Image (cartoon, rainbow, N blue to C red; front, side):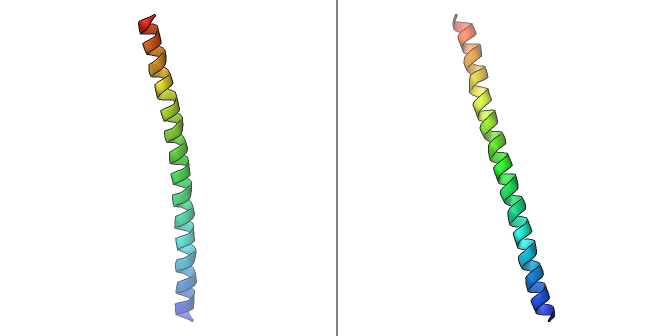
Length: 52
């Protein structure tokens, strides 16, 4: 009885941890993509101003 309860609890906790980890990974990846997209544009703009 206790073993089954512990098994259910551990599976539930594992699912929660996985969902949180997936959420953090997705948000972190999106933030990195946004930063990667904005940085080169800012650098390119500065370079263009410097050249012209």
